[in-house]
Amino acid sequence: MTELKIWGRITSLNVRKVVWAARELGVPYERVDAGRQFGVVNTPEYRRLNPNALVPAIEDGGFVLWESNAILFYMAAKRPESGLWPSDLRGQADVLRWLAWESAHWDAESIGMVAFEKVSKGVLGLGAAEPAFIARGEQNFVRFAAVLESHLKGRTWLIGDRLTIADFSIGALVPTAERLGLPLARFSEIRRWYEGLASVPAWRDAIAARNTATAEWFDRRKG
Ligand SMILES: N[C@@H](CCC(=O)N[C@@H](CS)C(=O)NCC(=O)O)C(=O)O
Image (cartoon, rainbow, N blue to C red; front, side, top):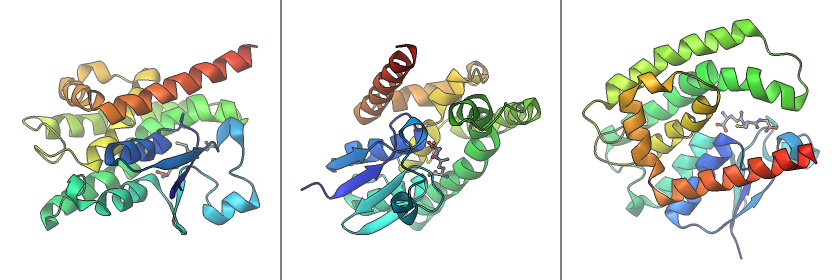
């Protein structure tokens, strides 16, 4: 029996974080499509799992959790031998700092803001994109990417020589930033670090699954 159930479409970067973690940790899982064209998120049943009506959410042996970074923590900390959640206090604080930065700035104030205006609003029928929000998101991207760029100098991964859930949380937004035309090219340390992440097999698999799902979706819209 599969114990872990992941709710959410694979085209969501926040769902991909969780799918990546399950693959990297070797945890069997069942993923159920929800969000965007699949609906589900506004049903009373789903809202009991995640009252935000957003993906992802997980169910693990009766335990329900939403917020992708909290889910990453839960999955990695449950398997301390993986090292994806450090065992020392300072390492933990460092990872937590980057997870908070990802939610507050890298996602909500920059890449997520531009993606919502340019893509999600259209798909969800939420009205026209607001140029002022796109401009703000683009400015914020340059500001926060500079912080990440300077931090990565001399480091293989975000907290040094150890790959952790922080790398996957922040890295999940890089392909989206690329697709949105945000100026990643000028940040050579980010590109170098992301290439390392993109070579991790579980990461490659999660991206490949996303690309297949997106291609199928476009085909259906054309057909
Ligand atoms: N902070 C939340 C963000 C969740 C979120 O915004 N999810 C998006 C997809 S990335 C969503 O559910 N969008 C609506 C939809 O897909 O219908 C998390 O990290 O889990």
